[in-house]
Image (cartoon, rainbow, N blue to C red):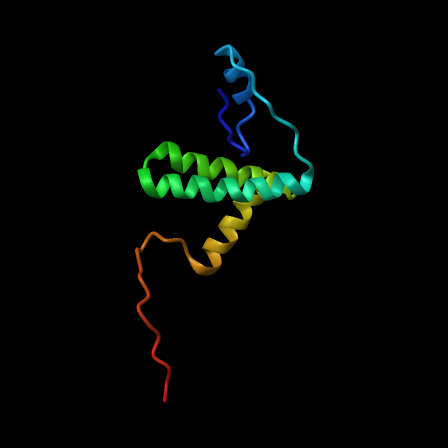
Length: 106
């Protein structure tokens, strides 16, 4: 029996599969394939989080975000700096504001 996944997996997954006496068939992606697979993984993880609303799924989103940043040449520190800069410029989401509309002057 075979199960097809065709998706990016965490680094230890092949070893975990082998420990179950199963044979993982995988390959190492090129840089462009990797970025594409990370984007797909982000969509998958966001969907899983929206379904489950649990901390573990939320942490998966964060892990993929860090991997995307690294693949684009950014460090975790630079990602945090970009977040801080945006928060300083536009604020965070702490005040729970929900913008309904903007009325233009006449």
